[in-house]
Length: 339
Image (tube, rainbow, N blue to C red; front, side, top):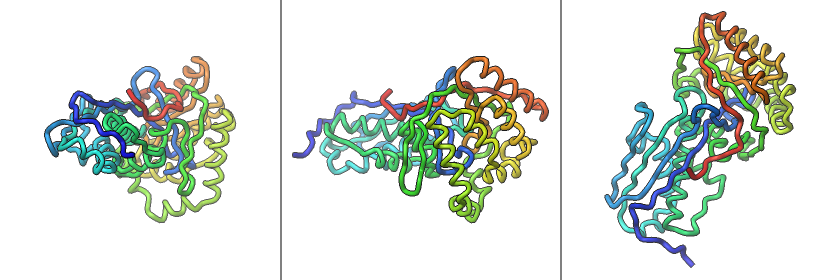
């Protein structure tokens, strides 16, 4: 029996949020990402969507970040909602009559910062659209893998290692065609970057790598072995083992970007290696979050450890003449959800 379809009601709206993420975890370039939750500031993006009676009209309004495009086909949340979800159910959904779409976004995640703001917007847009459809088509479901694919349609760079954890929560691994979620301890974390240093776009960061670079990375068994070890240590809660694994592995993607001055003047492979080893002595795993410039250190329990991590960053950046800017967060298992 076909699903019951409600009559268009403009007062029916749905809202969803999705968290920030940290991807490219050292040996996990394009294959490994984890979800973050802000402890002092919101590290999530929110999307509200409803149908309107203005046939064919799509309007997008952004509440916080003036840099976010409001043309729907340039907006990650709108594109994921429309091309990823609403277009899938167009035939059934047309039973409500001619309609338009109104979308309101609230972008809280700093961008660009290497925290997956675009992936979070796409995930929240996708989820809000699913909740909206259920207002009209009572038994509508979209399997989780299709939810990720719908969000990827909105996030044009196709970053599964950002979109996956934004949708699912936790540590998400792309292994061949499979996308696997692992639950992680919700450890406190500290994100730090040199004040006044902003990276270029993620697209620029990717363009530093040739296609041969990407293929070599994908096929390097040593890198894959390190990535598998990182997953095991995350899942086991082995903070010190994870710190050692990450500090002793020099990621070729990170090296190329630092050599190209993508992270900021003086942030060289040697600087990063010394920073990671200093944090390792405290039992704190660290990596360049996404395409940077924020470096993420997983601090673990205890406020005194957070203070110790801050001192490491302050000493390191002072040597380059920088003052670090900090964001307090924690790892999270919470995926995209109703607001």
